[in-house]
Image 1 (tube, rainbow, N blue to C red):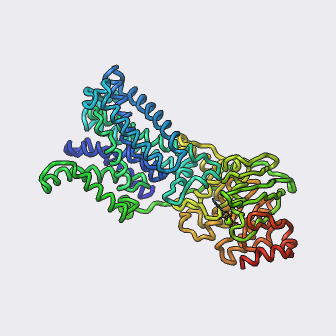
Image 2 (cartoon, rainbow, N blue to C red):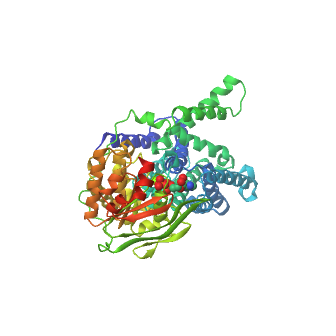
Amino acid sequence: MQRRALGLAAFATAIFALPWLPVPDFWITQLNYIGLFSLVALGLVLLTGVGGLTSFGQAAFAGIGAYSSAWLCTAFGASPWLGLLAGLLATATVALLLGCLTLRMSGHYLPLATIAWSLALYYTMGNLDALGKYDGLLGVPAIHLFGISLHDERRVYGLIWFCALAAALGLTQLLDSRPGRVMRALNVNRGGGVTMPEAMGASTFRYKVVMFVIAALLASLSGWLFAHMQRSVNPSPFGIKFGIEYLFMAVLGGVGQVWGAFTGAALVKLTEDQLQVWLPKLIGTAGSYETIVFGVVLVMVLKFAPDGVWPMVERWLPKRHRARTPGQTAEPLAARSKPARGEVLLEAKAVRKAFGGLVAVNDISFTIRAGDIVGLIGPNGAGKSTTFNLISGVLPMSSGEVLLRGQRVDGLPAREVARRGMSRTFQHVKLVPDMTVLENVALGTYLRTKSGAFAALLRVDRAEERRALHEARLQLQRIGLSEQADELAGNLALGPQRQVEIARALASDPSLLLLDEPAAGLRHQEKQALAAVLRQLKAEGLSLLLVEHDMDFVMNLTDRIVVMEFGTRLIEGTPAEVQASPAVRAAYLGTER
Ligand code: ADP
Ligand code: MG
């Protein structure tokens, strides 16, 4: 076993052995709070650290979990376990509703909505007679587990830490999976976004909602444990102040990683206690001055350690092994039926795009036959990338038609176009920098695999996952990049990064591959290697549309060339015809060289 796994096992053993050792009750109480806070912060690791989405409403979700169960137990004598179920259901419903309303919109709506929702819930809890108004509900029963009543802090401790560590494990497993790869590609603060995962076939909106609901459920679970530990509930721990504090814990600990949640929860809880002892002595009066101290600390953390405290701790731990994905023996993923050579694969008919008054693409038409490499060339600003985005469904077109194997694909979202067999790379490389090269390529297998978040949490997706990683390895071999498979994608130079993008596109088993300036920024030798790879792909029966402004690169590679200038088609023909055309020389060479 690795040293890191051993360390983890030792940590878990120590945690669970603690209540049986003669440690003071105070410690156990502290650790209970740290466990409860960690659960909520873990949700924020997923939502904010991984997904780049901010919520101030996690304390309010904890409130739903706490109040649902407390109310059912005190008013109807229900079992806390039924209360848990009801709380999770209520939480999921609210989170779904809130998520569906706000997650389609741009970044700021979610945080705003979670603030509004926190305030609304707080005043509802405080004003409902049935919920005891601001005094809350007393006499909440203890949880019974296997006939044991968890009525004191030493007894409930084990359940709290079991939930926290299980959540951490589940989250780790979720992130290392098919849905996890999509989630990790979404974070706009780390150079991600929705365009690439959508082009790989994923509904990013659905994943954002899933992440939001999971985070809410973890908070709700924490609230339930809290209510039955305290044996009472009142609105104050579920207000906006705690919503902010949870976010603070996650950021302080290191919002990108699972263990950051525990670090942040522990730091905040322990510091808060110390401040409550020392601040009154220093300043002389009691008050919530610790909020001010936390505010200052938060600013310092964001400035000097934007990744939080955990990465500094991690530096002292044994290194994690990356090369742990064998996958050599997996059964290959199913392949799509290929069009016959010469069959009409793509037809673009009078495709047009206007950005306000600027007609970036002016009624462009061309045809690609199976087995062909077609080049789309023209000076910078000619409209090549826009044409590309129109065909692949990234941008909606103003008018025109696109047919893929005889089926209309214009008007479809990019993920549906991808499903029908078109795959693409991006002019501005879109890789997930903190994912390995292999994982990045495996994103391309998204449409050929099925496992969802639930399967990943429970680890029942492993057989399919092996096949996906195997496919990714094959594609890396195909483009000659196997050596770098376990390297982080962000560590590669631009040339290899472009190759990784090609491998990722190939992993979707496309009929048509669209490459946007694959040779840009490559050195001469890299260009020749790339040309050899593309020829090989053609020989294997794949069709390519190649956007380039490097004339020489296209001339030796393509069957046909479409030349664009100012959004219009200047000429279409064989490389020889294009090269001989005086209009092309004037327009193209004049501006480019
Ligand atoms: P190319 O890829 O051939 O260099 P582009 O397709 O990127 O050219 O751009 C074509 C024209 O459309 C340029 O004048 C560019 O400024 C304009 N353009 C591209 N995208 C947008 C956009 N989202 N909004 C407004 N104008 C755009
Ligand atoms: Mg371009």
